[in-house]
Amino acid sequence: MANGSRQAAREFFGQELKRRREEAGLTQVELGIRVFVSGGYIGQFEQAIRKPQLDVAQRIDDVLQSDGIFERMWRSLIDDHRYADYFAEVVELERLATRVCQFAPSVIPGLLQTAAYARSVTIAANPFVTDEYVEEKVTARLERAQILRDATRPEYWATLHENTLRPPVGGSAAMAEQLDAIAALMQQRVAWVTVVPYAAGAHAAMGGLLQLMEFDDAPPVAYTETSFSGTLIDEPAVVKRAQRAYDLLRVAALSPEASLALIRSAAEDHRRCASST
Picture (cartoon, rainbow, N blue to C red):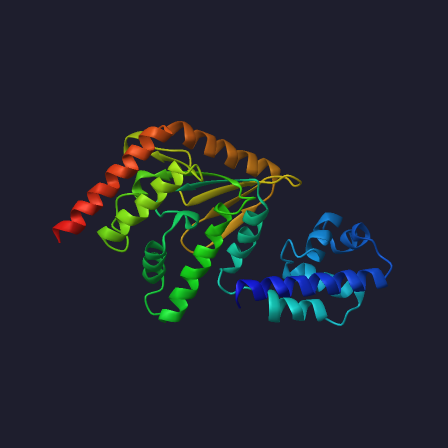
């Protein structure tokens, strides 16, 4: 489903939710209490700002006695199979965030990926899928990255381990292009990127990807991901630990200027390899 069609589906969901809620004589806050979310969440669903979750749609059906219409709308119109189930809500939250901070230990984060890099990592993880599947995933990743170009874009911080700069993902020429693209985003002040060098040794998040998101009107959340699963965390104590881990990573990282120099140097290394083959 195209991005515009998905937005239209959300708008239809929101309009129908508002109509049926008002017919039931409930305010947004009253409905929110009954389905275990805030009244502000209900307002965001009605304004098509936020994608409703399946379990919330099911509870809305129960409260409004709507014979399963909201669950059916979610399943047929809103559910986006371009993202893994554990990651879909993260994509929604990124659009609402005022700040996104990421640490990537081995792969360039999706928000920074070029098409060639995204295509290569998609094929590496799914070697037997069709070209159509690959291009759908690549398109979704590039669409997701558009939040960095929006007028209301979040403040974006990325801390990369040097591991992400060295492998020639997609080939040496494609990797040079990828690192050039990151350098350009840094120069345009779209992204604040630093690198944890090999010389830093052990670091505070020696596992998978770590992502932190902050919002104007909601508590911060954390997201962690390994090769086959991801976990969205909103428990305040755990989020605080994740924030501390990210702070320690930033201390271990090179300065922005030194990081940019290392990224450019790595790009040149890949370019030399490409020209010698």
